[in-house]
Image 1 (spheres, helix red, strand yellow):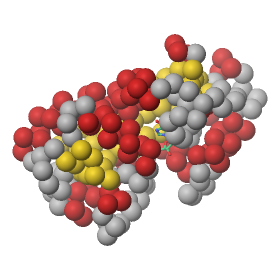
Image 2 (image 1 turned 120 degrees about the vertical axis):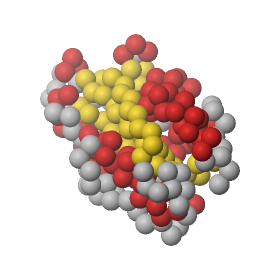
Image 3 (image 1 turned 180 degrees about the vertical axis):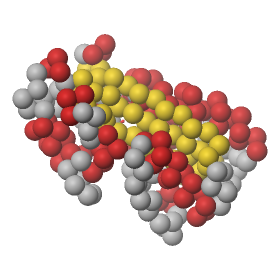
Image 4 (image 1 turned 30 degrees about the vertical axis):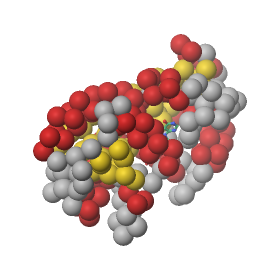
Amino acid sequence: MSNRTIVLASRNKKKTQEVADLLATIGFTVVPVTDFPDVPEVEEDGDTFATNAAKKATEVALALNQWVIGEDSGLRVDALKGAPGIYSARFAGPGATDELNNAKLISELASVPPEKRGAGYVSSVALSNPAGEIKVAAEGTCRGRILAEASGSGGFGYDPYFLIPEYHRTFGSLSPLVKRKLSHRARAFAQFLPLLQKIAEEF
Ligand code: IMP
């Protein structure tokens, strides 16, 4: 591996693109774990975003004997006591689509008034060395509100329903450039990238 290429332990294409865009700002190229068909899927059985991010990073790093980034993220909705949280990708069941997850979210919030629809995205990121040791970890959050109706088709997951109050727009309708500055992932990587850059001298 060149010291400017790094594996991302994610099978989510849109998330991978966002991470690739963030890493490109410091001249890194992301290789998705899907480029290595022999690497087994990581079971996300931790009870926090940070545990799952670390688990993804270490298991894939050990399988490939390479430096690997793991990222685990999700949506915590105040009125649902923090759900779907770490279960965001499978809120509507194993292998659920974004559409099914969104439909479940909107139905569970049907009777909740606008002022009580606060929510926060969380992104946890971890870097493992080839020996499976976590060398850097960071977390970012982004507050917003869940709309009753979708607006825009940008981003992924819950983005068309996630309103950024300061912009009066959802992540589904804001440009990717704005999401790259404001999102939970942007905030996690703002802490993570300088540390990655420093450690990359060891790669
Ligand atoms: P993970 O890939 O296991 O970390 O699951 C992430 C899930 O959280 C996604 O499938 C989405 O449901 C949700 N999620 C995380 N980040 C975002 C985002 O930036 N926009 C919308 N949904 C997100």
